[in-house]
Image 1 (cartoon, rainbow, N blue to C red):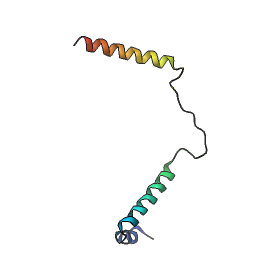
Image 2: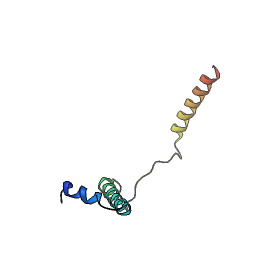
Image 3: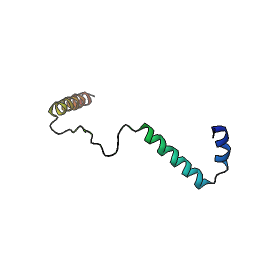
Image 4: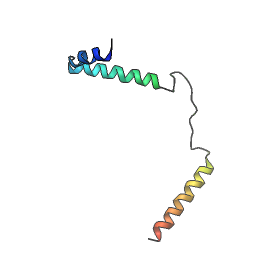
Length: 71
């Protein structure tokens, strides 16, 4: 079935049926574009033990504090 045939048929659906079609299409697109697979394990970064990041953030906060104090 072509899109030209499908569009008129979709226009004839009631609101609930149109929502079902939208849900189906969104779900299909999400599955096609998903880079994560169900049942797989993925590494996640954590701030724990990230001492360099903490020092960088403290430096930025201190510079911001001193800049705002001078205003």
